[in-house]
Length: 130
Image 1: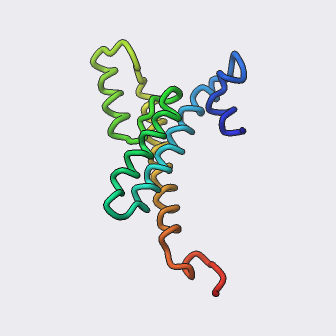
Image 2: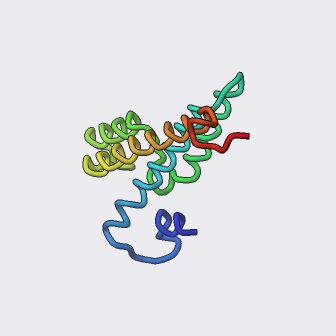
Image 3: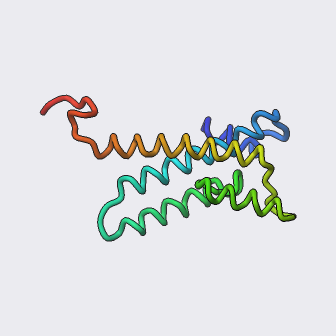
């Protein structure tokens, strides 16, 4: 509920503050990148590419209409460069691109830490001994 109300504020109200308009896509990028990095860090076996691709597809469908569904600084920089060359649709300012990259790096760190915790020895993450 609460996350949806923040990132999809247009579904709940007609207007929002400028901070919310900037924050909502950044939160989507952070969460999407974190979940993608977690999946990359924990997927194993022959079907790992399928799991990673499925996670990326789900994240793009979830947040693509809010932020564009970049989830990767390289994609964000490519969209920003496209904007510099005169794109008329999906224009991304340098300021918004910078916010996205910061959110994506933070999400990558969170996702990598979560994957490390999920794969760590039980004693490393302070589980009680059996």
